[in-house]
Length: 96
Image (cartoon, rainbow, N blue to C red; front, side):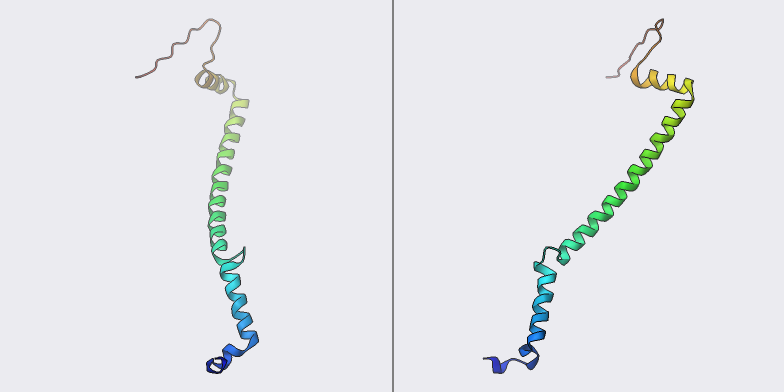
């Protein structure tokens, strides 16, 4: 049975190398498929990181403006939190 095999397949080092290669490609916990998935996930996470860093810089800029400009702070409080002065009345109109 082993006499019909080519001599390269009888070589212990060649067979061991092929088995190791197959193990690393498909059976190991860090196989090729997992590496591709992890690389794709890393790319999407880096995109999310950039998005959130931009949002953080916008919020920090808005915060700095609100803390330095009293009129802008009052406008923000009135629009966002419906705050008012004691002598004012607020009417909220909701569209149906």
